[in-house]
Image (tube, rainbow, N blue to C red; front, side, top):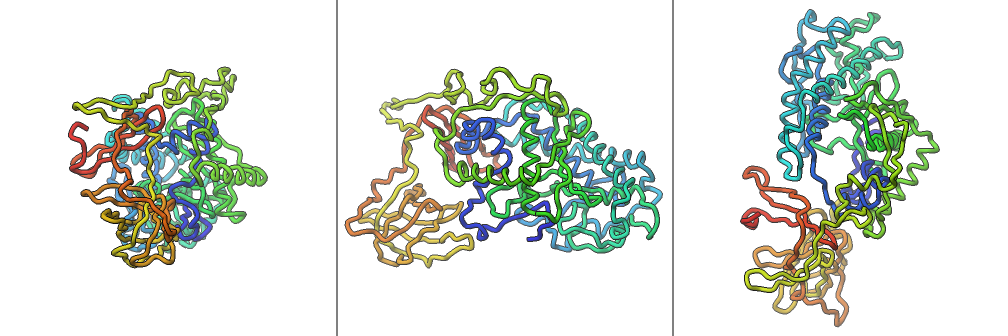
Length: 573
C-alpha cells in the first residue's frame, strides 16, 4: 500500500492477531480519558445513547461542504444539477482504479465567459453551489436520523437555516484556502498544468486515480494563475460524499488503531489536517477535539513517516469565527502517544475488561467559550460535574444519582412461576463432547480462521457445528476427522427450526477429547427468561430494508441485546 495517502487499509491476513472490529479510535480514547466507566458502558457494553436531532446538522453540513468542494466551476454552473456522482464498489468505496463511471472525463467544459473571473465571482458561484446541494443533503441527513429508532427529540429541534449558514461559513473558510493558493508562489503550477502532479489518493474531483491529461481550466505555460486554477489546486482530500460510512478510514500500520480525516490540505507542499465541527465550540467536548486532532497527526506520521510531515492542525467551528489552530505534537510527544495508546488498546480492546477494571472516576469538566477558547474559569469546581449530564448516571453506582435499574428473581405470568435469570448470570458459551459426523473439508481462510462444519453426535442428541457469521475459530485440531471424538470448547449456542447450532468464533476451539471426557449436548441451555428495562430500540422493521427487531435490556447486573427476525418478531413488540 502506498504511503502518500489519507486512506490506509489493512488486510485481515496482515495482522491475524488484530480483531478489525475492536480497533482503538480517537473517540474511544477520549471517552476513556473522560471517565473509564463512560467508555465501558458505551463500547464494551454497547449501550448507545439516543441520537439528538442536532446530528442532522453535522451530517448535512459536512456532506454539503464536501459536495461543493468536489464541484468544478469549469463544469458546473452555480445553479446546475449535481453531476459529480462517484462510482462505488459493492462495499461503497470509490472505484478509484476503474476508468468507467467517473463523470469529469466525459463532461464538456462551460464557456469560459461563464467561469468565475475573480475571488468575488468564485465566492458567489460557491455559495450558489452550496444552496443547490443543501436541500438534498438536509433531506438525506433527516431521513437517516428518522430511520434510527434510537433517537430523541423532534425534527423541529433541527434548524435547516442554521445549518445552511454553517455550510456557507465552511465554504468561506475553504475559499480563504483558495485565495492563499492563488497568492502564494510555492505551488508547482506548471506541473499541475501538465497533468503530472496527481497524487495516488487524489481529492475527489470526478476523475479516476490515473488521469494525466491537463485540466480544462489549465492555462498556458508562464501565465499567471487563474482563480479557477486555484480552486482546482487547493481542493483538499476529503471523504467522498457518495462513499459508504467508514470506507475511507486510515489504519495504523500494525492494525490496532484507526481514524478518518475530514479534510487534508496539501497545496503548497504543506500538509494540514482540518476537522469540521457543526457547532460553536462551546463546552467540554472542545477539549476532546484538540486531543483528537493531535492523535490524527500521530496517525498520519505513523503512515507517512518523514516523507510528508504534518505542518498544521485546525478545527473549523462552523458556528463560530476563525479556525482554531492546534499545536502539532513533537516527535517526542508522538513517541509517548504511541506508547500510551497501544497500552490503552491492550487494556480495553485486545481483551474484554471487566466493569471493575473501568472505574467510575470522571475527569474534571472543562469550560470553553465559542470558538473552542478556554474559559476564564477553565475547570468546574465540582469534581463530579460530568456525572450530572451523563446519560449513564442511572445505572452507574459512582454517579450519586438514583438507580433506574430493576432486578427480579422470579415472575408470575399466565398462571406460571417463571425463574428469572440476571443478565450478568446468562451463560453465553458452552462446551460439548461428541463424535464428528458429516464433516465437510475444513478450509483455512486468509485471516487465519478455519471454516469448519460438521454434526456433533452425542447419543441421541445432535448439534450443528459451524463458523460464526463474524469469523470462525483459529484453534482447530489437525486430527479432526470423521468419527473422531472431539471437545468443542466455548461455542455460542442458538436454535433454528428446533436444531441446536454451535457457532465457533475466535474464542472457540476444537480439540481431541480425552478418555472419559464428558460434556453432554443435552445440558446446553438455549432458553432463559429475563426482566429488564428497555435501554434502547436498536432496530425496528420498516417493511422494506429492515427485517429485524432489536432492543437492549438493562437490569441491575448488566445488559443484553435481544434480537428477532421476520416471523419471530414478537407481535407486541
